[in-house]
Length: 155
Image (cartoon, rainbow, N blue to C red; front, side, top):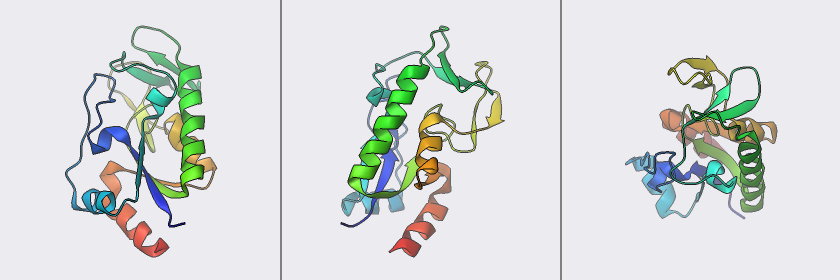
């Protein structure tokens, strides 16, 4: 089975963002991978049972807890979504992932701190961490040239 690439569903135009929108990329690399049938798209937050739209959520710095702007604790949903994402990635033979930067699920290396003040911290989202802990290399959509180089190395 040829390896696949996991991608955040919002990055290929699926309306799964917290506000009901998307973050579609019009990018040569992504378009090529899509045409080749290499992409496996998912949204961990939707897989975890959260609705679209939904309140904005952030990881509370240092607490491994996710809360909505409304104060609701959604850690369980984020954890469930991360686990389902990992299972799908393993079933599909995914060797790398392109995830949405700064997302509480998908963010890599930089996410918001849980204060809803647009303050960044050096941390990763729950799904990103779980994928990495299980040997899947993660890139954000801001690192597509690095992702492309990694993919070519794999091939």
